Amino acid sequence: MPDNKEYITKDIYEASFLVLLGFEIKEFRKEGPKFIWFVFEENKQCRAEIDKYWKNEATVNVKQYSDQIQRLKDRIFAMTERKRSEEGNFKGNYNR
Image (cartoon, rainbow, N blue to C red):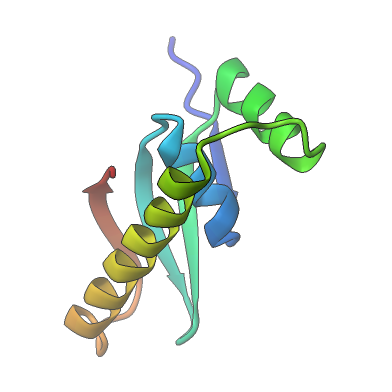
């Protein structure tokens, strides 16, 4: 039976880092009018990269990271504008 653990974060910078490394955002979850949770499938590789990120041991291309942050911000803005009056989850397959 597959392990369906989730890793969720509100940190757009951490989420951008994970997407840049190729991890897929499974879902966007809205919390109130201003917060979005980024949902990833958690596995050993994902957990190892998260640990590197928080220990300041991760290395990525700065320009690609900056571009990824902007793409994620643009995606969130587009989703919130489109679903402004709806409650619940933002579901989608956003990757890069």
